Image 1: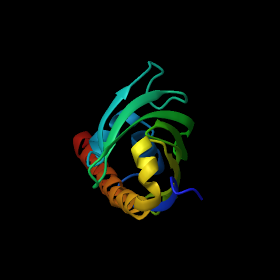
Image 2 (image 1 turned 30 degrees about the vertical axis):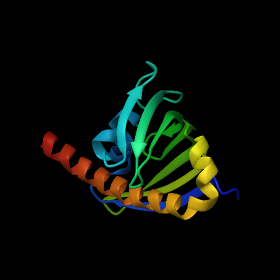
Image 3 (image 1 turned 135 degrees about the vertical axis):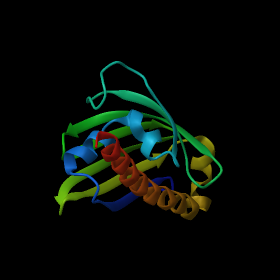
Image 4 (image 1 turned 90 degrees about the horizontal axis):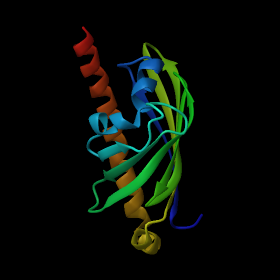
Amino acid sequence: MPSNVFRFDESWQIPEGRPRQVWDVIADAELLPLWWGDVYKEVVPLDRKGKASVGSRARARARGALPYELNFIIEAAELDPGRLVVVKTFGDFDGLWRAELSPSGTGTHVQLTWQVTVERPILKFLAPLLRPAFAWNHRWTTPRGEAGLRRYLVEQKGRSA
């Protein structure tokens, strides 16, 4: 595998929401800064296709623990309510993010696959040397997404109660 290509497989346990509730949040790119704000600093819709629509696109700005930001486009590629969210990314990195949702007790199990190719020239150039740091940076972001999603769902339940 080239040094600028990464694949991450992860699992989240989300006891705070059923699959459709979790799907409603993760399928809407505009919500990313609200629940994964440690990483997603800004998401701006680029079209009027509507939230959680195949083909809808948004511009995102994200940052992990390392001192650089990534800018990219998120495009909804496949959406199956309550079951699947697949998005493509283009820009500083090109890739595919896939979240498969399934019931787990009274909550949701989310199986994540993230395959990405770093395209930003300086990061691509440094990838052979910094590959372990880039992987560590990704592993820093993932638990923040899981924790943020859980927190967001709790807050939403509190607002609707």
